[in-house]
Length: 245
Ligand SMILES: [Fe+2]
Image (tube, rainbow, N blue to C red; front, side, top):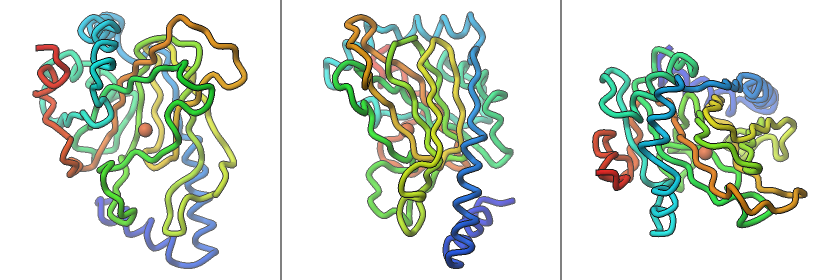
């Protein structure tokens, strides 16, 4: 099935009225069942190299310098051999994520959050999309799959994935009927359908723990085609952009 055919099916089922809309939402709800968690995302040696290349100390320095992690994303076409440790890790994640043959590449970035700043949502629920600056929902595209490789184990900061999707009527269902919580654990890898609403939750009812306060993860979105976002860079620029070169 071609990309435009997929989109037309989704658009038609939303447009066809309440019955079709209910069927659409039911389909979306079952998408949450496709969420998968792998305890060993990357091979141990490759994972160690990843952590050594992008150590917590360096991440902390970038954070204090105001580095914009969420708008420093990289495009890695899957038909190119890996040229650095980040691309090597992604190559190892590919058989776990199992993207379809329509996927041509990944957008990847580092997700960095302080977990003790608030007991509430650390990263409010959102949709990953082709361009964070695009305000027109009709122009948004969603990755086939979203995924996260946790680089460290921390006591709070679960990834929360809901059964909610974006339709022409807004977010449906209005309140989540189902949610999955995935606790950050070193080298744990989670994959979920790319159109699902998700966020990161704080310590909530749990007492504040002062140690291990930085949650670091490698986010990898699997796309049919390269998003048009202005902030998306070629993966080969990553060492410079991440101030590693
Ligand atoms: Fe996200």
